[in-house]
Image: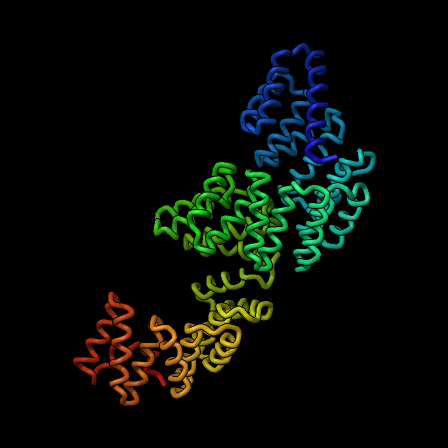
Amino acid sequence: MTRKFLWRQSLLSLLMASGAAFAQSGSDKAARFYEDALDRYERRDIPGAIIQLKNALQIDKQSLQVHVLLGKALLANSEVVAAEFQFDEAMRLGVNKAEVIVPLAKAMVAQGKQGQVMDDPRLKASGLPSAIQLQLLLVQASAATDIGDTRRAAELVQEARAIDAREPGVWLAEVPLRIRNRQFTEALALVDQALKLNPSLSEAHYLKGSILHVQGQIPAALSAYDRAIALDSGHVETRLARAGIALDQGRDKDAQADVRELLLLAASDPRGTYLQALLAERAGDVKGAKEALKQVTDLLDPVPIGFIRYRTQILILNGLAHYGLNEYEKAKPYLEMALRQQPGSPLNKLLAQISLAEPNVAHAIELLEAYTRAQPGDGQALVMLASAHMTQGRHAKATALMQEALRAKETPAFRTFLGLSLMRTGRDGNATTELERAYKSDPRQIYAGMALVGIYLRNDQAGKAVVISDGLVKSNPRNPSMLGLRGLLLTRPSEMTTALPAWSLRR
């Protein structure tokens, strides 16, 4: 029996019961409010349903049916504290616990009460229909996963699976546990099992895409996402993921199409607004990007931190939005909380950038060293770490890090940085070799070119300095520094050193 069928059956029985209750009370007006609200709820007109249910409660405050449906509508509208209150009222009035126990658990999870969801006496599964027990166990398993209690989460999933292994949800519930442990093969096997039971389950196709996405199998991930959208055009998570890939690939029009749909499907979801900010920035609309980022922070800042402490994606989102607005102090608490849930993740690099800007170089080094231990091949992190050590005068350490970065990935930018670090340790010969390789590979490496000009001048190789200077002007025809550098070389070569940055002259 599917969840959708159970949900419809539950509402149908509730409607039949409500008709009798309202008939007994003689309140035809309240009954009409309720029936209209139920119709709106089924059509996903949630705000309209809430208004009509509140109208019904003004007439009959003891109607448990109204409390139940109002709780569900408020939950769907993300008004989770009010939803929990309505479910409590329904239970106080004597509603069958099976009607409210699962949405009550979801309302508590949405408030960050993951620990309570597993131990709250209101949420005991004993005596409930097996289908309701199964749903409750899956909500509790998700809560256990959120707080990192993987052992208990696995036990709860197994309990649910023992009730009905034909329910796809009992297989999908284990997927986050496997992903957390980077057991991608096992995660894909679980998704495939769910798809055997229900090939048209959009959530399963979305999760399959997510696993492939994390593994870097982008074409396969996109295929799974496309299938999920074909099955459910309103699947928000899939549209978010697909838009993210399009942005990474520079397919801004495709990303914009998904973002437009997101903003229609979930106007209050800050993730769609954040993607809108990225698109605006990409298009050169700085004002539009800032406005969109401000919308994100306006949506998320008022949310109590306890509500989102286990929602890593939301924590990162608000941290990134504040970071994009140059509000580093506001960004830090969100990013630091997310980092505690994802240690050794790219969040280390972002927080290190903030520490460097403060400046707190020692803390930046600590963050970057922790990250490079977890991700030793990340060249960008190694460059950041080398730069931080250089600011502390540890040029030999910076050189070693850049050599390590180049072993992981060959790029002209890394060669440039290695050359600069060698130059600062007084190893001009080695520095020249690295800088020449970098500049030859990519004439846009301005710092490599300027450093070479300085080295050549110190070694009475003015002809070589002029050649490099000409190349810098050609690559950067509108850069006044390059034009000025070339002019000084041509007219006053003896004073050329005054035009060069101090680091390019230092032995």
